[in-house]
Every structure is written in C-alpha cells, then in structure tokens.
Length: 182
Image (tube, rainbow, N blue to C red; front, side, top):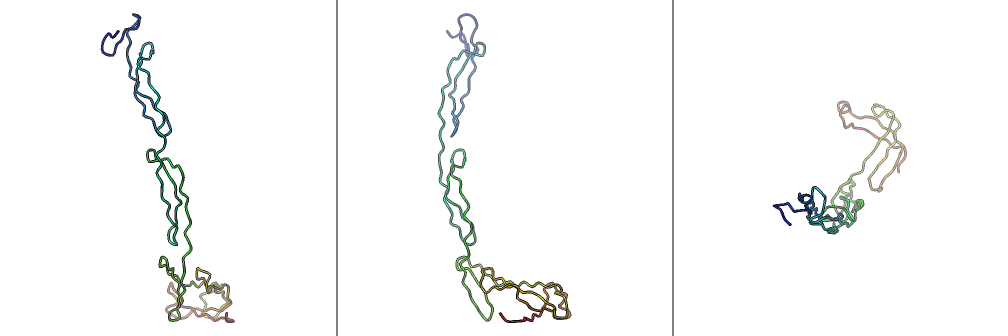
C-alpha cells in the first residue's frame, strides 16, 4: 500500500523511506547495475538492481608502419576503441640501413642513399700528441666513410700545422706526410 510520494507502508511498523540506487554503467571489463531502490530504514529492496554484463572490448587495429632508412617502423597492434586499453602492443622495428650508391665526381668521393637521398662524405680523424706544432710530429690517421667503404685505421703519418694567420682559426690547416702508401 502506497502512503505518499516515495513512501510505502511496511506492516504498520514504519513507512518505507525509499532511496534510489543509481544505475552503474558497465565498462569493457567491469559489470554494471540497473537502477533500483530500497528502504533507508529497514533496508528492504523495493526494486532490485539487475547485473549488466561487461560490454567487452571493441578492438581497433593499429596498422603497422614499415621501417625505412630514415624512420623506425611499428608492427601491427590493436587497442580498445572504448577504453583505450592496448590489446596487442605495437613493437618498434629498427631503422633499415641506407641503400648506398657510391659516386666519385672530380676526385671527391661521396655516397648517397637511393631511398632517402642522405649524403655522406668521409670523415678524417687525426690523433697526435702535438697537433699544433710547426714541425712534423708523429700522428695516426683514420678515414671513416660510415659505411665501411674505403676505410682505413691508424695509418702512420706525420703532421704539422700550416700557415701563420690561419693557424689560429677553429678549422686549422694541416699538412700530412704519410710514411707509406696504402
């Protein structure tokens, strides 16, 4: 028997004070509940809440990306479109090596990648105890192309600084004298 808005008689002991149990939405992995109600005084369930099953993930494919010589790639993966949880993680694919074309123009040796256009010139490294000497001193020379092409290491030579005014510049002029040809 209903006594008023939100109130119902309870065997003449008390009048139910109805409390609404709010709906809980289900998620991808957690169950939810429908809206219900109960008495705030005696706890009797007036309208029972029913369980709403978890929705389950809505998988979206994350496309793979091929690695190139200038960018790393990713394997194919997937994630949930609703909650964003990663289902299959994407893994990094390392960059590929440059596809080098060797070219010699006017005695200048250069290399470039036929895929991305990256250009490289050999790097000459000189090590000496006294690279600022006006007299020849012993040194070692290493040529690195970056692609193990025309490289050599620790070639014995002698080195001296050249010039008077230019010897104070950041890029110094040197003269090399090799002990034997390679």
